Length: 340
Image 1 (cartoon, rainbow, N blue to C red):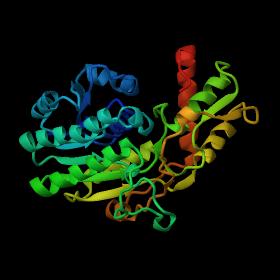
Image 2: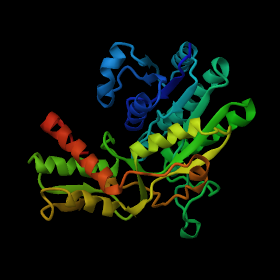
Image 3: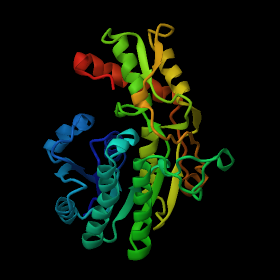
Image 4: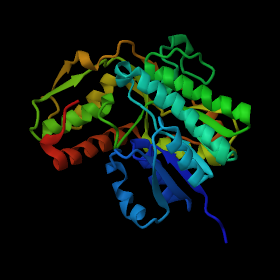
């Protein structure tokens, strides 16, 4: 009898983790264990609730990246074949207000996960999710950004992801663990948190359409250049990362093919609205970072050549699906939503 593989997903209730769980359920026969905190909102995995309740290929364990004992117990109990480390304090702007929490969660949290794997499942195939933010402020002559571009982090979050990146590679080299690191560039779509620019825009537009707020969208820096990928393409990339000849210690830039400014993203969202032409744009100082990583254009050749991955979902579909996601949430939750 064939024994099914088990995939462990930290951050399963987040945008990326929930989409990855969907992908694994639909495209493999693997079992899934998801790590959540006791207070984690479960809305993003609501479509999997029946399976979770019936222990049908997916279960949840409680733990916190800042609590060594809980992480140790979760890995000891599970002993996964694959581990996708997606959980993090992932909001760059928040990291300026809570730098120590960000560093502890992201750097030391990664160490806790890898120490537990070293102890209980040293042969696990591990994906450590760093971030394109590690590159930070990149001069134009270094575009597009390849894997060997120097790090110049522009936020405490980015600094924490430099640590995450280096911790993953260190454990691969020092302890001969099968760990790979990714630097995913901007990725979005349904379930994107409203603290991120494009999702905040979509949420505000959806609220305007329902008459909940005046026709005015609050924005931060609209000139920052980004290459946009769809989250559903991103999780497919993560699956290929651990299944197509995984090479211990390797690190990859992954990203989409549509490059534009944050202002262009805002204009696309507004163009899809019934209020197009009626919405005012207002800069909100609280949405501006002290320093911004403003040229985020990746060279993804290394990963594409290794796995054959290509982004498939067009930019307009990604943005339309994001706006429709917020339209549904606004209808459901109405005036209880904040406009952040």
